[in-house]
Image (cartoon, rainbow, N blue to C red; front, side, top):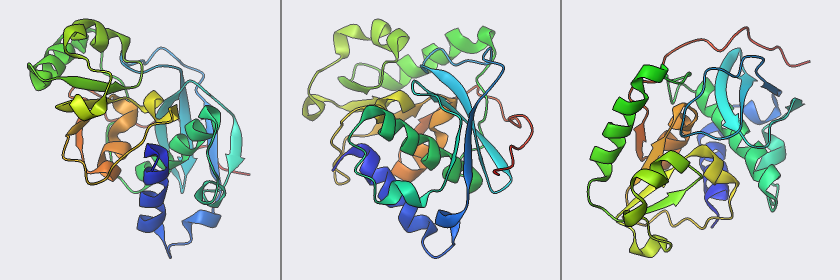
Length: 209
């Protein structure tokens, strides 16, 4: 099963019977792109659902109003479609309070954050899902190309756009990194690492129309 399909099924199961699938969800790009995490790639977006905003970074930014039900049966064969689904999933997870982190840390925390990440990795062999260029540079000698060889998997939200297979029974731990990844980590029941991320409101709520 693809990783994104696993996440779709997880959020669908958790919200089954709540009626959320028929409610509108608004996806929009933020005007201020300065609040950035060095490990995330793309454009900062606001996902508005149920009166709550969730921050999400995407390499396929969009301004659209849709409904969760549209992704539940979608094949998600293209990267842009998987990116849309990831944004919707994060919006629903944010509404359900699966993550409180909604903003990147201050620039003066970046080095400390990197040290925390390196400490978590240690000497382990790692498989990376997502670009995370800075992290890859820091642990380049430990990166493996086969997830079966990895002792640890690192995930950033842009990695959800990839055609990545996922085994829910795998014992290899995953660390989800960056302010956009909190809801994803909760759905995967894996570790979330954004130690200095800020808890904040992401602008005014965008009412779906």
